[in-house]
Image 1 (cartoon, one colour):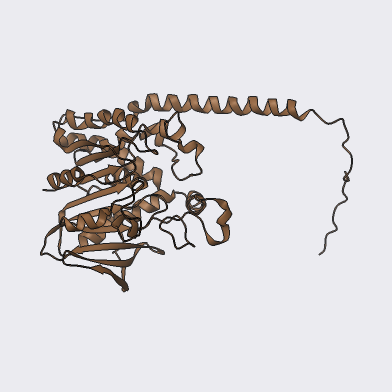
Image 2 (tube, rainbow, N blue to C red):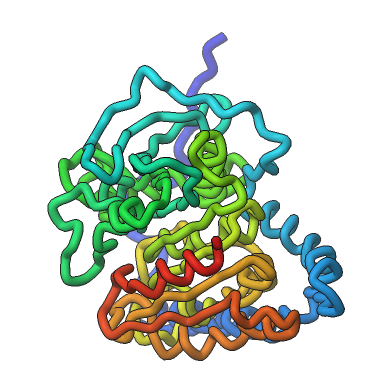
Length: 390
């Protein structure tokens, strides 16, 4: 049955009262906005101050320590969403028919392959398999924001650029005898460039739109995009452990920038990773999120995917390291990094190292400084991995 449209009471036309002074209105808007921001910043400062009360770390023994932090590991998994413990996952499925050889020399063969992260969700990886007889240590290398497995491994034109560069991380690892997996974390597509963050139909929406779009969908579905990325990278560990030439007890990780974010979070979740190098990420987290910070804080950037519900309440960077401990962890930091405040990274590190000190495991944690920028380039990082995965 058709229903008639209702009559419009107020037609278009002149205002019914004298217009307000919009400059005065804007002054009120400013006052309220600033009140909201001040209120929220104060609340965040309180959460940051009180965070330690949520942790019940027991340093009486390594075993007691691991038991004491386990509830917070579960809380981390719940915060990110999508996490399934390795022993509870569906069997790993790869698309062998899509495997491509990218490169081959006397040291290693590089492949590109697709795999299933979760039922109905796929990603791809680049794998570098050493030509020498195994068993080899396995290494998960992780690209940063807008990157791809080819870039972190060294198969791009800007592989060894002066700044914001992985410096052929995957190739260097393979030539040191590591069996390498580099997993893709999506940011966008539609341009034949090394980094991408937009989408073909939304080119004018900015460099962060592709990742933000997926993050919004993941949030509506009850998780986070980064939670899906962590499952994808953990499937990379599954891939390494499925290879006959890999020593399952010698799995490491190395990531730069947003890959450094992964190299901090994934070992906190996936205890099969025995040693990790977090490059160009580790910092004073609240200050990097909302400022003040020497580089642009995330609050004033277009990147929405760095904000998690409990990160300030529960998980400063040093707290995440406490979930990696007693396994090994290193920070790699550049003095001239324009994205990560070197001084704040250095200042935060002792809080992470304290957990190892209390367990008398000081040799398993290290701050690796260099005098360049946003790069993963030190020989010491690989020496650290070699020592810790021995």
